Amino acid sequence: MNPQVVFALGGPGAGKGTQCSKIAEHYSYTHLSAGDLLRKERSRTDSEFSQIIDSCFKRGEFAPVEITITLLRKAMEETMKTGENKFHFLIDGFPPNEDNLQGWMKVMDGKADVKFVLFLDCSNEVCINRCLERGRTSGRDDDNKESLEKRIQTYLRFMRPIIERYEKQGKVRTVDASRSLNEVFADVKSVFDREG
Image (cartoon, rainbow, N blue to C red; front, side, top):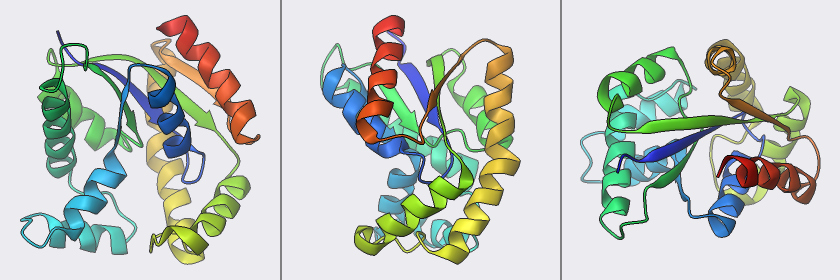
């Protein structure tokens, strides 16, 4: 069985990680965060990729496509080994740009099926405020005003066209993510109840 994938996209602070965690609790999905996988790899002292990832993050740029897809693919393969019904994946923050989408299609074509894209739609202002709030407690060094401005611009320039591309294929399910966590999840639940 090919992995069944849902991409969760939205700006920094739109609630992708939070909503994906809740989906994973309620449905038989494994939550993979491209950003978390990259951050974990970045902190591994024995990783051949850590310095590359670190310098990309500091510049507010995407990590190289090959690294991101390698980490995602490895995580999916490891999860699928743990049980025969472990083939539903929720990948948050991916693909962040055209390069990553092309890389995914090249490497994963015929090996994974993208069911739909969950788009958590949220204003830039709400995104920035949430990230600054999160930055006080998260320990994430990219939740600061300067880095956020770059991340928002990067999102608008690169991720929005990915969302638009999937919209043309009728594969986007949009949820207004500017509301409270529970209000957003109520809408997210109705998407997953419908889509399976």
